[in-house]
Image 1: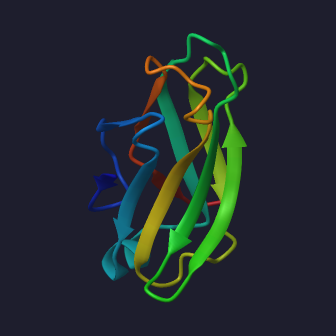
Image 2 (image 1 turned 90 degrees about the horizontal axis):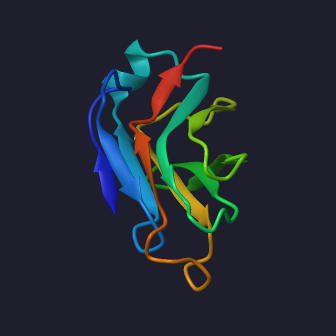
Length: 127
């Protein structure tokens, strides 16, 4: 599991996701939530290696100690092109927890070892 710690991120850190390493988590503490607008979550896919051009999908959720809340999903189109994706948090980031980015497709059983994506640290934004 990749972990991105700290603030909402002005960072060029890159995290690799592939069929064996499908999850990136990012802790959000009380200080970060107080000082950063968090109406939206921005996910930037920096690089895609998808030789088979199969579907590439993601899910974003938020987990506190008590529960996991669904924020949304997005997919690359075309499936080999990077991009920025913005999801509304709908007030789900009101207490400390962790943002979770999960690579939902391609299916590990149908994908090659060559498939991978690089993503940046998730950023919080004001609507």
